Image (tube, rainbow, N blue to C red; front, side, top):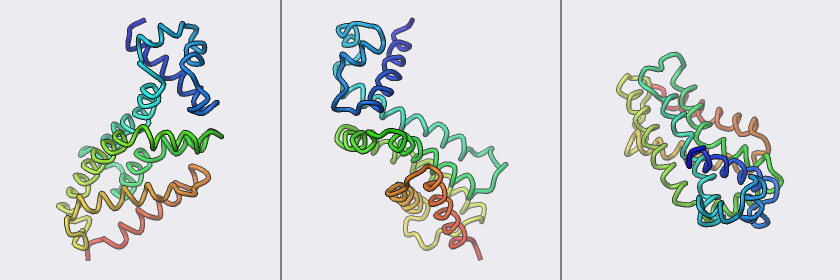
Length: 196
């Protein structure tokens, strides 16, 4: 097994343990035992539990950006623009929400995530907003959207959409409830900013 495959197995095992026991009660020993390896062997791949948690979080925030890029790709004209924006917002925000909702340790995981992973979220948001702004700019150029109400048009609209979708997670008790909120946001945007 390659070093990368071992790291992937460690992250998958740690992810399940974090969801089951929470961050605080999970130890490097727990992760090693779940994999059937020694703790010193685990330390050859990761220096501590924080590093493992950050890697797990990165996968939930950075990896979905590949899906976003595909949804917003130039050659994807098979769906209406509003559907593509809706799907991009869900791809960006829903993976972490689903994991938090799926675990009774969700609030603790969210707290640790806020403490340890702010830079990951910042990078993910920045990349997402660039992808979304590029897509919105293409819609403006094609005459499908009028972003005149926004001072810095596509970039500002992308930021507003991203932050709004993030805020809509608060109090959403199911992924489906969150999806309905995001759909309403996108429909309102496209209705309000349709060209005359």
